[in-house]
Image 1 (cartoon, one colour):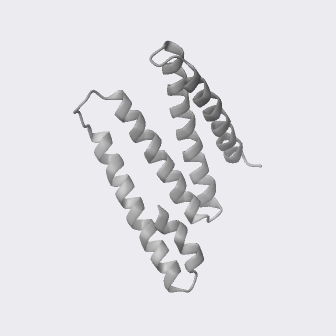
Image 2 (cartoon, one colour):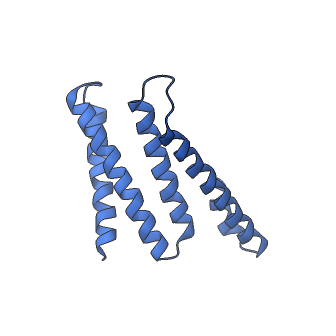
Image 3 (cartoon, rainbow, N blue to C red):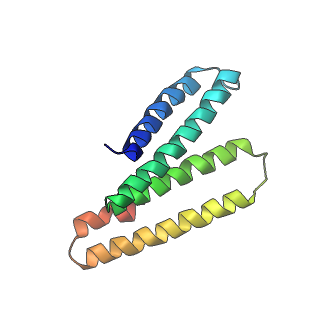
Length: 127
């Protein structure tokens, strides 16, 4: 096992534990906020290291899944952290990341479908 896989796995374990803690704690309490922050950081660590491992193993679909996870967690955290009706540069950057990833996934899926691997192409179109 490589260090990247271990970090990815521990990121997931911490995300599960802190996510449950956040859900069980009273909303707005110190425990809720801290465990929510830990959840976000651990999910980002998990996504980054999972994406890296997928890239090194040429698992393209899992790379897209990692980027999508990173996008979802980051944009959700920014939504909760920002005041109403405020949009910053980070939101626009994440939008470009999501659009670029969606376009790339569509292109890869279309390429796989065109070479007769349509069963594998479906996953790319989902993202």
